[in-house]
Length: 135
Image (tube, rainbow, N blue to C red; front, side, top):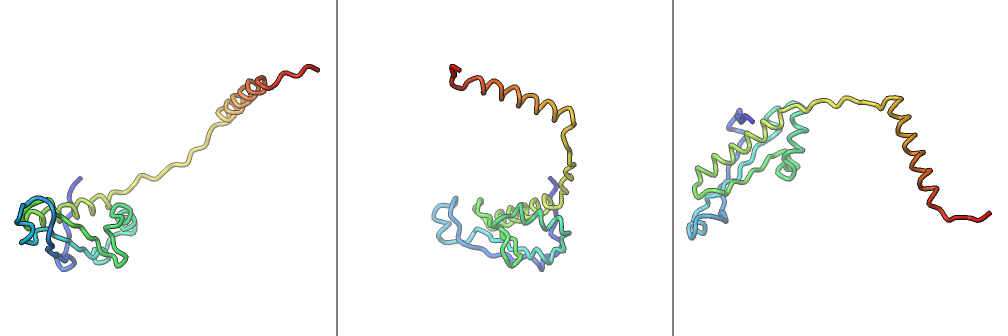
């Protein structure tokens, strides 16, 4: 999936926070994790892309329309920043892929008849399992 570039740097807010994970004692001293916030409304997405983004992002999309991505896999701010931007671009690219429309289908008359015949034959088999009555 191709990465989609974020058109305007003004809609991005980056915060560096203390991270857990790799880095040893360095993680206690340096804020290497990045929290990327993107204003989704400022992106001007098509309605179908916005709906798709809402589904894909889940809890990463806030009620105020901000997409929040946290990257803390790497030991440096630059690597985490690049990772967060890459993940945001991939998410936006995935949101722009249109889903194929579902075509309604219905069973043919012959298929309905086969289903009813199968039900009748099963019914006869099960009816034959009942208690034997001596009349």
